[in-house]
Amino acid sequence: SQQLVHTELDGTEKKRTDIRQQGNLAFYDDQAMQERLGISSSPVLRELLSDLYRALPLENDKLTEKGYRWLYKRLYWRVVKEGQRKDCDELAAAEWLAESGGADTMTFGQFFDAMFNFIDVWCDSTDED
Image (cartoon, rainbow, N blue to C red):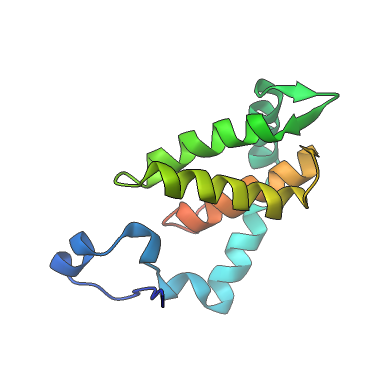
């Protein structure tokens, strides 16, 4: 089935369109892309994600798939208010595979990239704050 991303919606359409199929074209011009990429080198973001990483269940300083899925599910339900458990489970599995490269564990670098991508997709601003 074809999946469309909607970039311009009026109030009624926005309520009827799943948040995962909404987009903002303004985030994809050259300046916005540079601003978003610049945030990935923020020391504050690195420290916050480092603290989060260390709070998760690690094995030999690496994140396990179980720990990643635990976090992913909590994030999913915060942003997809009317999601479905099956969708959440399938996305968590697919994201783990993509972000870990199919390994049994994930390094902090992989975790940082995964969380930055998640933040970048779900935040509605190019502001670091």
